[in-house]
Amino acid sequence: MNGRFLTLGVALATSLISCQKPAEYVEKVYPIQEEVELKMAGKWEIATVDNVPVLTNEKQVVTYQEGWTAFRSASDSAQKPSWMEREPMSCSIYGNDITENINTAQPAFLKVTSNVETITEEQMTANVKQIHSSSDTAQSHFIVYRKIDKDFSKDIVGLWEGKLALPGIPGVTDHRWDFREDGTFLSFDRDTINDEWVVNHTTTNQYMVDGTWLAMRKQALDPVRDSRECWDISVEGDKMYWSALRADSVGQRHEDQMELTRIVE
Image 1: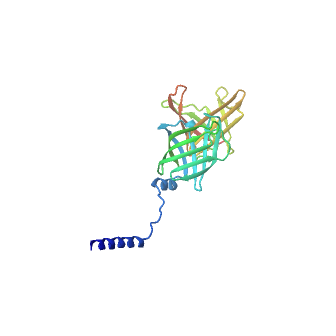
Image 2 (image 1 turned 45 degrees about the horizontal axis):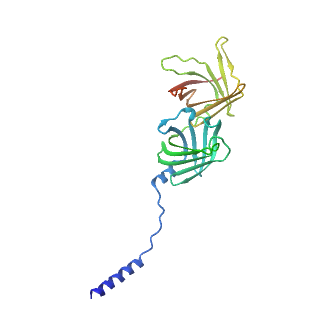
Image 3 (image 1 turned 60 degrees about the vertical axis):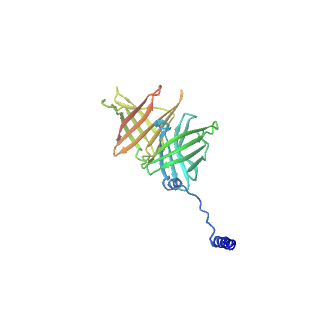
C-alpha cells in the first residue's frame, strides 16, 4: 500500500512540473547601468583625480551625446603637446562601462575606459584608464566628474580688460584680450609710460571654451616656446571672472583670480 502511494505521489509531482511554463530568461540589469544611461548625457568636467583636486591646467571636459558619441577637450603638454577642442570620439556603453575611442590621430591618448561607480545629476565617479597611443602605456585613476550646465563659448567673444584679484590688494588693470569668433585671440601689454596698449606678438594665439573651462595657448618660434594657461570662468553681464588652481615649482598650490570688464570701443 505504501509503495503504491509513493509511486502515485511521484507521478503526480512529475505531472505538475510538466504543466508549468518554462522560466523566461531575464537579463540581469544592474541599477547603476540604468542610472548611467539615464544621466550620462551632458557635459562633465574633471574635478578630482585620485581624491586630489585637479589643477586647472590639467582639466579635461567630456560631453556625452545620446547615440552615443563623446567629445573631449584637453590642453595636454604632459605627454606630448596636444590640443583637443571637442575632439569627437566613438562611445559605447556596456553595463556601467563606458569606452571612448578617438577618431583622429592625437599624441595624448587613444582610448579611454571608465568604470562608473556612482552617478547623479551633479556628479559622476569612475575608475578611468587612459591608453596612450604614443607609448602604448595605460594609466589608471579614480576620477570625480562634476556636471556642467553652462557654456560660455559665445559669451567670451569680444574685447576685455582684466586685473588680478588679490585679497586686500587693489588690482591694477594691466591685461587686455581680444577673443575672436574663429578661436584666436590677441593679447596686449599696458605701456604705462605712454598710457597705451601694445599688442603682444606671438606666432599662434589660440583659445577654446568648453562649458566653463577656458584654455589658451601661445606659440613663439624664436625661441621655440609653447605656453598654456587655463582658467575656470563665469560671465555675468559685462563682467567676467576667472579662477585657477595652480602649483609652483615646488608643488605648493595656490589660487589665482582675475576680474575682467568688457570694453566697447
